[in-house]
Image (cartoon, rainbow, N blue to C red; front, side, top):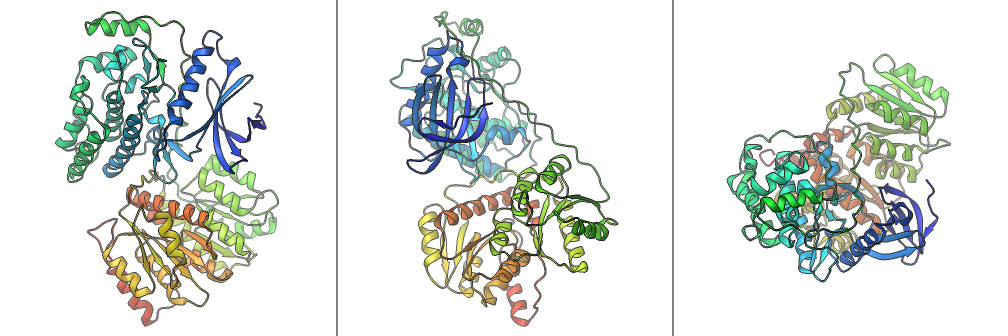
Length: 639
């Protein structure tokens, strides 16, 4: 497919996705220096009879969302048309749809489900207050960002209070999530969106929608049957949450919640009551994409007849139905293996031969001489461990390990290099999230021990799937800034102070006092060359409390210190002084999201097995004892 260089004033950088009517591109706005997504419709791809209708819908989406400015709604910046193209310029959102997460069998816990629905209703409540009704709420139109926030998107069939584009009798939506009035083709208002949110909530809690079957069967159930209480499918659900969902799914609009806020408050109370239950969760069910479509008019007329209503007026023309998303490839079955698979990547054959001779007795050893070859192997075979050189001609080791992390998140990654390049060392953790940094030439005993630790971690992780960390807003867990100056604290406070607690500790004793009384997700610590106390504390903390993440702010260009922080403290990210605020924001957001993922999937903590601290003096032992006395906020019953 031909990718244009520009669309309007925007520089096209690549393709984000493709559908039946057009393509979504990643682009750059040179005027204000920001990345954007451009959603296009190719006019020649449409049936001439449908062209004006489809373009009206597309233009209508820009009008509907262009008037909205809310953190829970993907923003629209611009609309334009060219000879054969209409396009919407929108906020670029990094992450996956809720549908994609559900399709991959991710199960959210009750608290996270509560946060998803709360954030979704927060955005909808704002849209409704502005006179915008979405009319197509479904999991594929709900995005979960990499920061664990919810974004509502695709207002393609939304209704404005002032719009006459949608007529009474016209039925559009996704059947599995449509309200009774949508099936009947009668007037739709905000309460129809709330009904659809109720379907999503039911599905998240039970693993299935309340009404299943063909479009006709779903329609019959929606109009005539009361859904089963979700507690019958998930015993952990309280009677209070049952009542909230039954109210949300009432046949009559007047019996439902009358506002998003009212629904949100009742739902969260039901979630809180359910958390007090101790019964196991229900099992997951297969999730199928819901296709937005204009319903068959014969089916609509039958629905109206069943409801004792006169036939709906027929609407000329038809909108092209959206294509269902292709099914995701099935995950490869887990196989019991006696030997772990290790991939070594280096462009020097002598290095690969030496590594083979060391490890081939205990592991299945594979080698690659460049990055593309290694990525092909990782994609096909998902090795437990990848060890890569840094300086290779076709791809650096950092870039290779970054892509390995995306392809196979549970593969343990290590960088093996003979160059003490500080930028490469920092990149190995910030981009590749390496388990260890190994220097050449290596000591055979050391590298065998490190690889054995990596294999043990990989086997413990196994096929563990990490649910996306849904970050509550505001967040109870805080950020502890350990710094004898106020620069890092001030910057962090300005960026995150309205979102979560940001606490300053000038000294280590102050830091322990904060950790004793408050849940901390992230420690942002300034580590100077020769400041052994802070560095040692970070190393010991990862041994005793691996759930607390650390970002080290390094004052001096000290490669040896940085390698120690990677290998012995498993710092999450590294920053240099003076602080780059954009990087600070990016890394802190990623850390808070990871902390939420640990709450959802504690098995992920296995990847933070660190090298033992070498010094065992009295000060170190006292520090360890103090750390062991701290509360484990992920499992409050433990210390």
